Length: 511
Image 1 (spheres, rainbow, N blue to C red):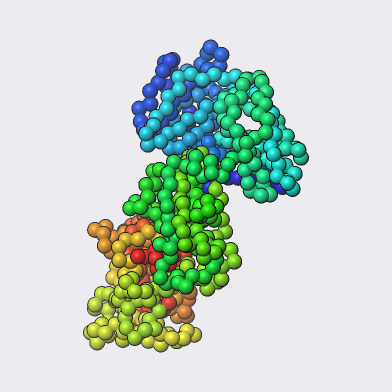
Image 2: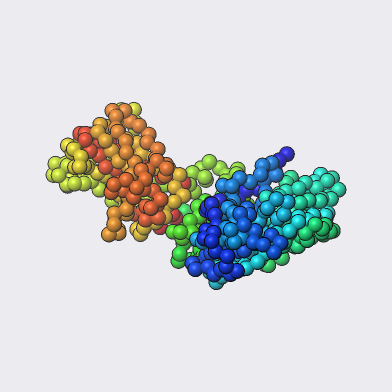
């Protein structure tokens, strides 16, 4: 069976070719933040036009396919003086590999909030080397995969756990052994490969759980799980999922990896918890982490959140929703906004989120109806039971009519929204809009449709919203500024709206 571990989210990809070919300077100083400059030699001469590739130190090779250029953080060649200069470099720990013919060398470096630039005046191409060692295979395992981290190299052990890594670039690097059947680390080692020589590492060291927990993670925080359990979730079903919401008020996103994949969570006994990073956006400083709870006792103590390890191995999301009842999954992942079944004009949101729905402009309905919005609620008919909102109107674009409601007291990030469901019938055009009416700039994400005489279930996903059209800013810009939901109608005479429901979020996302 082929085994593959891929980066959780790809870093920005760039292609770089050395510039200033006429320069023969023996030194170089970077001029911008987050930049590196490295000069490589081939013997006593600058290694001009030498291929280089950059990978994060946590990168693990695919056992079935070689990495493509698009998977590398940077690729290119040195200039005539042997320099490679990379600016606008992401933060983190990286491995830079130079290759020319049969010669190769690697060097590792780190860029962070303290060390924004790295300059290495001289490293030398040299012959490749080998690594000979053993992995202590767990009972029942036929082999392990041994990876050179940050380098596209993987080798399977034999049935006794013996491995030989051949033709490895010279330099310092880390290797890791992985048991695919059990998804566990079977051994690690920091090595220095000597040119044209074999390094014997004997048996790889199995990392101690507490060393892994306490050592490389620079930051930790205690979390009380009961604080993540809202009143509406009680009594709590088991198993269940609790959600941790991070933003600029409670988390410094610059201290974690750009995709959040170095976050780890442990229970009171130090055992890892299963998590799913639902969304992570360091730019807007928003992260949603779903944490699975297997037993009620797990919510009585404290959890530990660890982060701040740029070399952390790639973490794949767990299936935190496995075996949860359909009713529980729906309760945690959906919220009804409007259904027009009550005897008042309030939306369906609970408690402090409840607000009136409204019609506009005032001239669209006669004064009798507009003085009491409930007179615009009628039997749904046309195959639907219950009540629905009915707006007879005359409005030709740019004029319009609308129904809307506030859904959040302050601008909220609902970036993990799965979809918006709205039932619509009538004639003319309509726009389904999520927007911000609290800011001076009216941020909007809109979806356009055309009503017909039969009821139609309209499902709008984030990717269905128009992107950056005139007057509308698109989902990516609006998603963390949402305060209102609105349906506009125009170029027609009749609009019916019913049962507005959001999927992928719940009431706590709107508080």
